[in-house]
Length: 228
Image 1 (cartoon, rainbow, N blue to C red):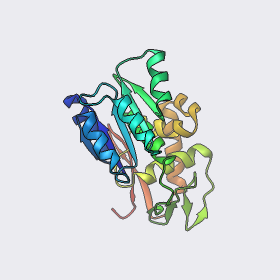
Image 2 (image 1 turned 45 degrees about the vertical axis):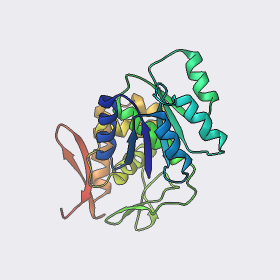
Image 3 (image 1 turned 135 degrees about the horizontal axis):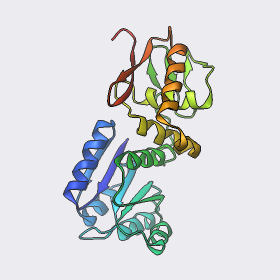
């Protein structure tokens, strides 16, 4: 999966690039709208785009309109410093799939882009995420153990799915909650203590699976092979 970022603020662009790199998402960053337009016109190179509205060379709305004018269904999230309803409507009418108002939380941006990628234009199913005896297929909400469904509550399945997709990388509690909320908005009401309870239950259910949930103090959780 590769994301195009068009953002002319070096501080914001650099921060987004670093955050997505840590999350394991490939990203190409340009600072001008005309550069973004040329790259998008090439077709097929990107799975989603994040466009700032106020770009030099060609503004984000114009880039988006030209993209849709070519019949390209690429998922697009607009970044805007303007929180007026009319501006949001303008972006959505131009063909945006989502928008985010500056300043924004990086965790929320990552979650929104992942949501766009999940419902994006790529029809081919990626290979299942795997660790030990666990697997997670792209079209399923819950992991499997030895290809058989696991006995998990919906939220246990959600947390384990987030950790399995990020296997070997740390997932903070806010990131876990954001990804859960993409499918179930009520999950945003969960407290840190509730997440800890879910993780405690999952640890028991993962015994013998070849995978374990490791607590990285001060950061979050990481699913890793048990023999590491």
